[in-house]
Amino acid sequence: MLPDRFFQYIFVRPHPLIAIPPQLIKELLTQADKKITASPARLIKGDALSIFTIAFEQEIEMIKPAIPPNEGGRLKALHSLNVLNTLAEDRFDRLTRMAKAMFDVPIALVSLVDENRQWFKSCIGIDTKETSRDISFCGHTILGDEALIIPDTTRDERFADNPLVTGDPKIRFYVGYPLTVMHKWKIGTLCIVDTQPRKFSPEQVALLKDLANMVEKELMAVQMATLDEMTNLSNRRGFMSIAHKLLAWCDRNNSPATLAFFDLNNFKAINDIFGHNEGDNALIEFAEQLDEMFRESDALARLGGDEFVILLTGVSAQEITERIESFRVHMETRNVQAKRGYDITFSYGLVEYDHTTHHSIEYLLSHADTLMYEHKKKKPSRGAPFQKEQTSKIAELAA
Image 1 (cartoon, rainbow, N blue to C red):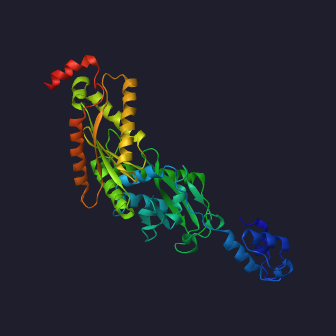
Image 2: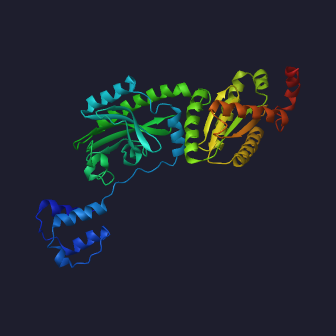
Image 3: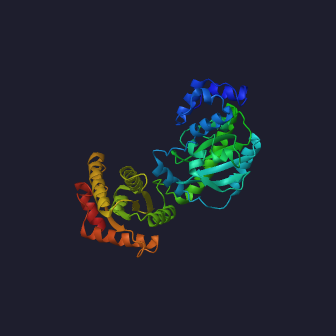
């Protein structure tokens, strides 16, 4: 950052022949990676404003927002909402209109930060529907837990030469509050913008937070249509939306993808012997362990009943087979520790995605489902699924 005393020299006494201390000029130009070939004595006779411009442009560069460490899971949560590229909705526009009026600003937005862009679910005051993530203010906001307040963008090194500051909409003031879904994924912001520098009080921050919470509730209402309420994994509808996007990405980038289809063994017997509440507990535990053992970037879903799927990208079927074997060993260990009276075991089918033969996600699911049942017939569950005292009951139920 340029020293404060340099700005004082320029703006307090802005004469083009002002005598700037030679050592300071040398320091500034050195910071700007300029080699000094002229003597300081000759430099002080030059246009001081030009010297300022050179040093300022070389030294001050826009800082792109960092990528959160949980980016894979964050994007998966965002895509599971199935809200990107949808039409404007009054339930969101109402909240941005409220924010615009409450804070007397020309622009209010519900911004969702996608992989390479920020997309506006609601935008009051501008016509643009999206911008690059690299120049987004909201990309910075989602890195924290509280409001990001920029009273004057021209005095903030992250944004001083941002195209949204130097060009339209000429942002001078910004406040954004992160939008969190599923208790941990920051997928975007509710933000307000002005073309003049401003201050923002703690009371105003509290009001913006209240509005952001209302936006989160609306997003969760959207999510409920794509979320399995019992396990908190995506349901079939949510999975189809996420899988469509992931496979399109794989096609564009020539990246491998594999679908794993899981089915719990003896699940009906668990329900019949131990009751439906315990059957629900088995589903919840299996879902939790899947979520824990696989990557955040993997698309997990409960399709219904005791059927689960995972779409994995960027890894081969052989690597996935090894991961599933590790997962099986992990579940065996949990079965021993839990002492439930029954074991949670599974059968699975694996299908490598091939865009030339898998013309739809439904076909890919059907193929994996068929392979899973073949696996179930050929390889019965390893280990006894029930304790010995339950074996006779199982036989009676199967008879």
